[in-house]
Length: 388
Image 1 (cartoon, rainbow, N blue to C red):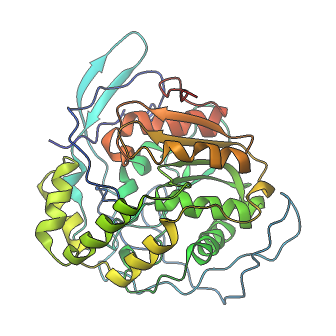
Image 2: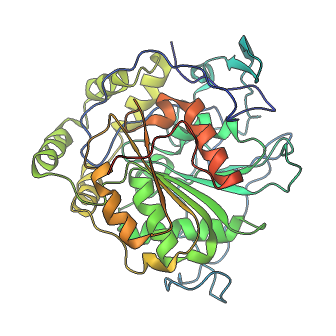
C-alpha cells in the first residue's frame, strides 16, 4: 500500500495532527543521487488554472543570465531560462483530484487519507507539469505566495506530487532540472548553471515577492546556489539531505559501481521497492531511471561528492532551515557545521526516524514542516535539535 497519506483540502499539510506512517523499509545506499517516487497525471510544462489547464505560454527571447550576487531588492538583470526540452505529446487533461478516504478524528483536527496517486500516474516520466496555480484561498487570508520545490537525483519533478496536492493554496513551481524528466536529453552543465536556470523560472513566473525555496539532496545543493547567486529572488530557504562536507571515498566508489546498472529496469524496480512504492509507481520510477544518462549522473556525482559551498552564500541574509534525516547517511548531519559558518542565521534540525527521501516517506510531516517554515518561520516541533 502506498504511504502517500495527506489531510483533506482546507487542512492539507497542516501541523496540528499527523498520521503515523507504515513501518519503514531500509533506504538504498546514497551515493549523491537517490531514488524517489510519485507523480500525477498532468501535462508537461503547462501552468494550471483553478479550473482547467491554461494554454502553453510562448517562449520569450532569452538574454544572458546575470549571475552576480546582490542584496535583496537591488536592481538586477532578470535571469532567463534556456529553451525547454520538447514536451510530451499528451493532450491537456484536467488535474486529477484524489478522493478522500478513511477519516481519523481527534480533538485537534480531522485527517483524511486520499486514494493512492498511483491510480493517475502519467506514463511519460517527463509529463508532470512545472506550474501549479493555487486552487483555494489561504486560511490566513493572505495573498498566495510561491513555493519552488527542487528534486533530488535519480528522479524528476513528479516526485513532489504529495507536496503539490498539499499546497493548493500556494502557487507551486516544480521545475524539471537539467538531465531529468522532460529534460533527460540535456547535458549537465554544472550546479551554477542549474541554479541560474531555476532563477530564470522564478524571475519569469513569480509576481508576488520572492519564492520560498525547498530543495532535497541535489535540489538542496542547487537551492544553495540560487540563494548565493540570486539572493533577491529567495524569500526563505529550506534544504534537506545536502552533503556539504563531502562524501566518503567508499560511498563514491559504490555510487559509480551502481552507474553500470542504470540501464537495467530490475535495478530501478529494486530501488523502488525499498521506498515502498506500489506497482504503478515502480513502473514510472523504472521508466525514468532507465532514461537517465550515465555521463550526466557521473558528472553530477563528481561535482557534488567532494562537498563545498558556493561562493558568496553569505550574501543571502534571509531565513534558512537545514534538515537531515536521522536514518540517512551521517555525513549529512556532519555537514551542519560547514553550513553554519556560511549561514549563521540558519536553524538546524533532524527528522527522527526518517531516511533521505522523507518527502515521500512521510509526506504529512514533511508538508507540515514546509508550512510551518514558510508561514511562521518556525522549525516544526516534531523535528529535533541536533546534539552537539
